[in-house]
Length: 75
Length: 353
Image (cartoon, rainbow over all chains, first blue to last red; front, top):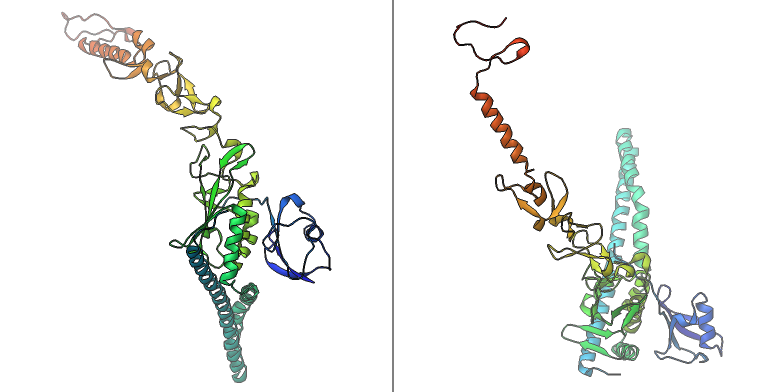
């Protein structure tokens, strides 16, 4: 099945990705963002916070936004 | 959670949709211009090729060589124009969100931040963060303002302002209220690309969450002012920020200075800045203005000790002048080895051998 994944850790664009039936949100995030700790991400499904064992549904909108992003100074 | 008046939200969603649509057109326009540049270059190549053919047909060797030279200068630019056109065409062209979807974004913003203020007069969306503390330095809460009218293709940081609600600026610069915010402009750093994508897609909630994440993170490698220099006193002379207990207070000008710009009067030992001290021309020690006095004869500033001891240079100068005057009154008589001899007036014309 397909879900819309918005990865604000990378380029920030939204893409439809394939996920197996019955996949949980924590498994999905661990696979897509393996280098980011769970506590460093704001995870929303269909614009709502969900439990880690939430089972993804066809067409779900998943967004992941890092809670720590390094700013800079303009040169 | 509060929701603002629905009329304002609706108007703002409409304004945002219009701006996003305009931004899409700007992107397409930019792509068109890049293609025009590429076509213009290709047109020059085509024209040169036709002229080269003409030269070959008519045996015009010199003219043919000139055409070849011309093409040599045109061809190297082609890869650049091709690449620019390719980049412009690769820009993702997502459909503009519907009003319904944009209203859902505003709802989500309210969920994430507790409140969202929509001002349809200025077309501004504003949310407030919790008070932020970075490495023990309390910076207060910030308001993130998205200016819909400033949203333009490729420009993100100009569309957002960050306002400190309880300003605790850096000691050395009142315009810097956060290590990554200068005069209301936040430098997004690693957040720039995802923020741009979020804004261009109309994902307001993602955009504001990204800005908040930047505000809640300290990047010591690229800060306007380091946090360990945030609190303290700014030296009135060199501007260096020092801890309050490491600063010195000038008793003359009543400003604060660092240890390199402050000193001590040689006489009264009061802390004085280098600008408020002057050297005595005699002993060359430095004194505060209270410990300097004015010579009554020449108005020079010198220390009280040297003045009391009659050490002012004008005393010596006066003595030299007096000596010169005295020597001018006596006629000069040269004796043996140049010694002065008393004048002998009774023998006119007589001189020593």
